[in-house]
Length: 557
Image (cartoon, rainbow, N blue to C red; front, side, top):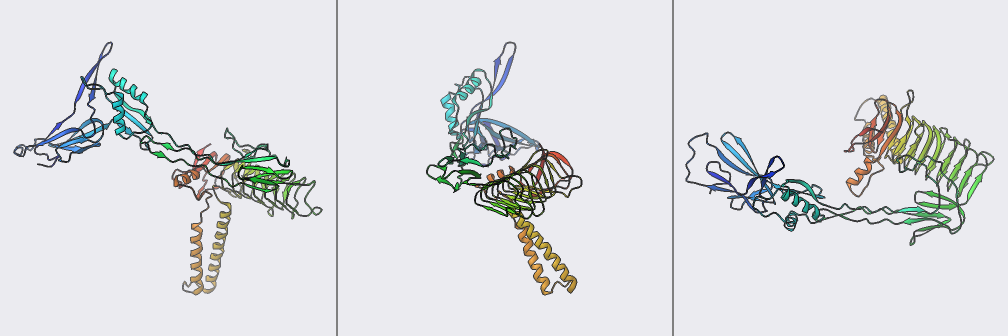
């Protein structure tokens, strides 16, 4: 027998029915073409070959070639075309010279979305004098198509009634939906003590809370301070094929209770062992005594080294140092001094001086900072201005909308919300989100070391000549190549690891720099390991990573 599709002597016979039915309306008659519903394995076309038929005499005679389209296949013997799925056959004819290509396809009764979360139904009215489908019969066909979960029999019944009674062609009716997984909730510390609003917190309306932090909250002996609420596992989902969809489980947290606070792992409760004042830094609870200094930190007080919370009524004057193990409030300012705190820091009159260094484990709340260096593990709040300073936050950095950031480095491990950035005459600032400040400082130090080494090599070459074979030249060149390689390999992103690549991408895309005022041309932006130079002054913009994470894009606020 000839191969299927041989043009000279193949006859193609369709094996399904197409009928035109008429629907009478009040003042008209509407015609509808309906198609026989075929089942998987049913023959939809047969091929017959007559080997004794002479070749056509006329070169203009038409030859037919049968092509199996989507959802069809040839039988094992090759003499018929079969449906692979339940559905409605279609024929497409294409003429090319004296050859006609005939393509059979099946429009599926059921289509399943690419994510396997939805199933849709296509249903034609029944053929005349043919018993209509019943719900159970249709449900069985849908099951054979792979749908095992989420079938809505009420919608199925409605589709059948519309196609049978109203002679309506149903297309893409949603008949089954999967259930999405419910992610587990992360563990968290539920504070049982009223600590007031926390500056920098994003409120329900998307605004940032800029209320002043409440400091030195008193707790009594035995008082319940906080309770660890454990993570939950969540619930898996199910797609319409009946396959489970794993859920993301909630993440655990590590809770610490230090000094006069104790943590019971079994109950999750943190209580005060002795009376004192409370300090909350991330998931660390501390109860300590409070040291009160009514005036300035100067020669009369000397440097302050305290295992407690410290409340300073004045300023920290040039050359002096304050080191507090708990929260620290300074009613005055900090000028060319060193401030270290294992808690949170509130400074009411600002920070200034090139010699000023602040290292804080928790949050920092200041009205302004000028030419100082501040490193904080948590959130940094700047209420009015940052002027040529180096500011590094492990969390977010938030400035009030009327504030200004002029020059310097403002770098957050999380996100930034700023007012105005730059000015007409200022040296451009570096503004970074999703960037590891400690790693950046290593990057900066290595970059400076490379620059110094290049200057050293150039000076040596000027003294000894530009001979690339000199021993010092070879050694220094090799060292420079290694250092440059290390520099380019450095990963400055805070988001380095995640359970899946999708989760990592989601985290990176969530990093943003919001500028509510103007941002001046020349400002250098960084998000994670991607940089962008602001080429023209603009305002009210949100900067975030593109979908492919390869560039920083600008969006209106």
